[in-house]
Image (cartoon, rainbow, N blue to C red; front, side, top):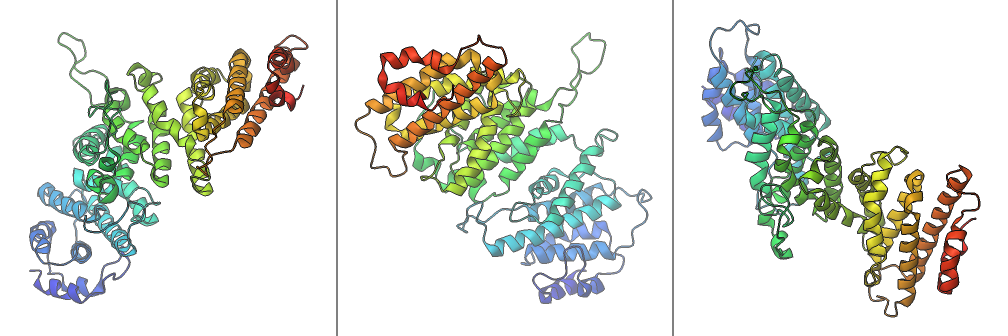
Amino acid sequence: MLDPILEAVKRCDATGPPPSDTCPELAELVPPGMNIRDIAASLDKLSSSALDAIKCLRIIQACLDSRQDSPQGTETEDLSSPLFEISEYVGRVILPVVPASEDNDSEDVTSAAKTQFLLKGELGLNILRTLTNRHAFALNPTALLSAVAYTNPQDPWTSDASADIARDLLRSQFSEAEGAPEKAASKGEFITDTLLTQHLRPLFSKSRPATVTASGRKAAFVEEQSSAMLEDRAAKPWKYTHVHAVTVFDWAVRNAAGATTVKQPAASGAKDDTQPRQPLLAKTWHLFTPVLFTLLDESDTVLKVRALGIFGAFWSGCPPGLMGQVGLASVFEDAVFPAVHFLPNITPEDESRIILNAAYPALFQLAGLVDCDSTSNSSEATTSDILPMISGIMTNPFETKHPQSVLAATQLLQAILRCCWPRISAYRNEIIRALTVCWLNIADEDTWPTSDKTAPTKQELETQLIKAAALLSSVIRNDAQAGQDQPGTMLDDLVSPLVKKEPLLAPLFASSPN
């Protein structure tokens, strides 16, 4: 039945007309009366024809566009099986996967592969849209997975058009779940079963950091992992071959926030026959954390920034305090905080700026402050949670061996002083201690690491400490002017006994306004 069209498609241009249009030469060769069952029956022949995926999709598109369908809902025969087969085939061939033989990084897909992905994506998604518009049926998991893979137009395999189609497909499939659960998959089940458990978990299993178990919980004993093993390409198929994995996980996290669990049967003797739905992340957070920690552990700039953004969506979607209750809050702190070490000159300035712009909001979320300009009670959590971490770094006598850490902690302290100043008064003694001990440690350090050209100098660190002291002085002065402190209570009043006892501290507070 398809022999003439199979021969014709070989002569067609590799790209052909726009993905939304049918190739005219192919349309003329579609056998009369070809229906959905015929198309499904031809899939095996297409798969074995040695044609590339784009030409196979062109044939399916031409067959669909040539059909004279009856109005939706008037067909009496059951087409669920052939529709399932066609959508499964289309979803399988358009999923962006780079062959292992191609030495490509996830952010460096070759231009040829990019063109293939762009065209296959638009063609396949147009076919899926045609099918769902003509027939009221639920797309199978393979087709839904591929649609999710095309939801981010920033990906090199996704055009604006394919992203729009993919989002519309997903929206229509899951919006029907409320009114017609038999025709649309549950979004919660799709996220947890299809995306996380069946698809993503195997891809990330070999590169999971040792701080979290395979079940997504905090590891009781952290075993050392060799860097060579973690950077093995075979251990990271999500990064080097299944390049769509990060986009799929991003979509899963952002959509999990509004999804719920499936209703469960109530306990025996209960009045209602079902238990109410619960927020998805509240019950299934452990399915997300292994992938999230793996991404946060990445040093690649693009992946690091995406991971921090995904973390923000995950953290805000979880019920307040949940990560602390399950013991993962501190693990997330350890995973996110190193991002502030990506500083020039060890990191290019442009990349450093991008990472820091993503890292600081993530740290504020960890501390319970969503908006840096907020003066609400949530800033209390910021100061109480982050300041001890900053103080621990700045007062460590051995931190001068790694000046980059001291610089990052000092700059974070400055950000806290700017953003959370209404809550600083209760912590000013701790801040003064951190500043003075750090200043004296720097002054006492005789063997400054000069071999590392990227490390800040003593003078650069001292300048940042002086700037932090000046900010603290301004906060204390504002408190005094607002009547929160007794008149005359200024930074100079608090530190003068210290300066008298240790004159080396005088330059630290000399520039502080009083």
